[in-house]
Image (cartoon, rainbow, N blue to C red):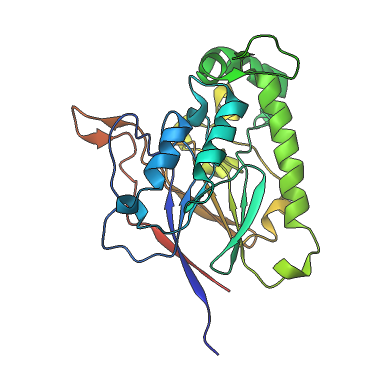
Length: 277
């Protein structure tokens, strides 16, 4: 019996607003995963991913990162991204699941809970306050809550990020452990922007309170059902296992047009990972 293999091209943090990027044309793959921070605003990322000259019309799983929303109202920008992607090869996913080429994809941005270093005495609320002043997210993203009079809302706040984390986390936990027989035989790939484990954090940034805005420390039960977990946000490559789940991050990072390099020398523009049924 022939084993079905799905080849997945993995990218995150391309940051096309700083410099163009074209995937190598000779690559052999079936599906593309874009784990956020592809372009600012996100609408531009959708248009880029949908060009035939970029991925040749292959299906694209696109989970927004934080930079997709810079200079925009977050929920409205997500709606626009979905609307423009509708009917194309691009699938904008935030708390969405989709089966492509025999693989079940679960996509959610998964903002953090700020509790990464509670074991070191840094509470979630303390880390959130550090992020409030130290992260551009809370100055450059707008959030219009229900009932807000101003059309563009107010500055996105750590409290909203925490609420979104809890909602996204509960959604993901339910999807990973649902009993729907339609998905029982399918391999599952989780795509988030924020990291699910401190193991993705490079040594230089470990134990820093601000890092709690980049990664969560999810319990073991999240790594029992997924074959692969792709994330972004950290401009540092990762490839490791937790339980039965392989965790991968392949970010390009910020492009410096003067030096013609990015801030992640480990980025692999040819990273294709095979998932077997």
